Image 1 (spheres, rainbow, N blue to C red):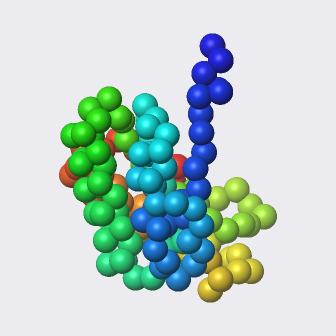
Image 2: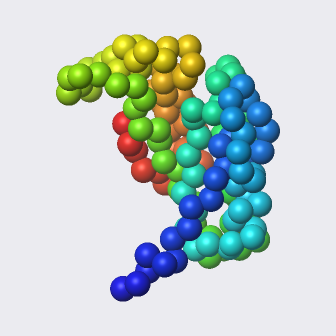
Length: 139
């Protein structure tokens, strides 16, 4: 018991500390890990990388490379990713047949990149499976 006091949240909008068309709050993810040295680190990326897929994949590749390097220096560290919760809102319960329905019906189209979440999660999962990094799938 009492392990809830051992859980920490750290803000890192883009994970790498660079701007990609939206907010870039917090430190780079690896700065947080080096500061706290947690046993388990779960990261997620998406809404704040509004640029193209190549930039998104570049961030993923950079973070994966850093994870592998950090694990070689600190073998007890465990890393995982979380996919994005689907974005947007509707008045109906959605079927998984089209996960972008809510993204395309929200009043904030253009302001957010909800319509890219599912596609980018698929890109992420491809990279994670190849790197054998575990993930929590929120789709």
